[in-house]
Amino acid sequence: MTSTADLAKVSPFRLFDVEVLRRQRLSPTFQRITMTGPDLGRFADNGFDQRIKVILPLPGVGFDHLSRGDDWYQHWRTLPDQLRNPIRTYTVRAARPEANEIDVDFALHGETGPASRWATEARPGDRVAIVGPDAAYSGTHGGVDFRPHSGARRILLAGDETATPAIACILECLPGDATGEVLLEVPHAADALALTHPRGMRVTWLGRDGAAHGSKLAPALRDLAAGLLVEQERRTGQPVDDVDVDSGLLWEVPDGDPATRGLYAWLAGEAGVIKALRRYLVSDLGIDRRSVAFMGYWRLGRSEPTT
Image 1 (cartoon, helix red, strand yellow):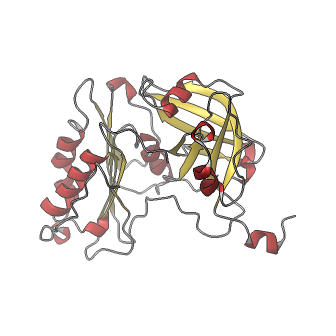
Image 2: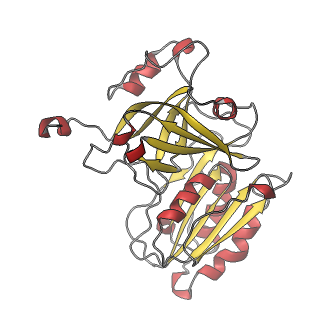
């Protein structure tokens, strides 16, 4: 039994040693990897858009050299390049701690990155490591950015293929009476997945099929966003910070209740596209900026950061 003193030392996140249990190709773009490990019974199933770190293997290098303590990241940063395993951030698509399993859905994009390459080639038994929420921690773990304000009555979820797993999980966690709109821009029309969601949440899939990133998502959002507002929610357009998405992080999750209630928007995907969508909602439509959470998951034309 874990003592009270031991619990006081527990950190929100811990490193889990896992291996591939199975893989499932969901569509041309999406690959589901089910991972298992003896300690995943302690993985906290927080739902929504819970983030984890996936620590990928290096050729000829395992994971035994990584620290299992709270200093795992600081220790990783001190390692020489040949021992510094690539780290990427993903959403937990499903957690089954009672079975020592989690699912992570990967958006495949060829050989351009270590995560896509690994997910494409992964086989049952392949080792990997993750950093995820520890159920033994009694506080709030963090890493969940879908936090609608108390007055939210309508939900707007919009994103590209990198945000699709998070949006899919958010939909499963919403109350049954939730209402709103979901826009998912994916590489191919065949990437439209069967999602579980409240009846009042309308899901629209937008296949690019060779078109530019954001070319389907931006006009679709403009067409429907105004219809989600009631007159009391409209305010004078507000200025927004002009984040340089080529050098800075486009990421803001507002806390507290906005001056006007009703709509809550959650936007995630390619940083340039998300920046433009957020500007439209806040500056053009006048939605309170505290009603809009936005996350630039990646940047077109720029290599993905290590963490």
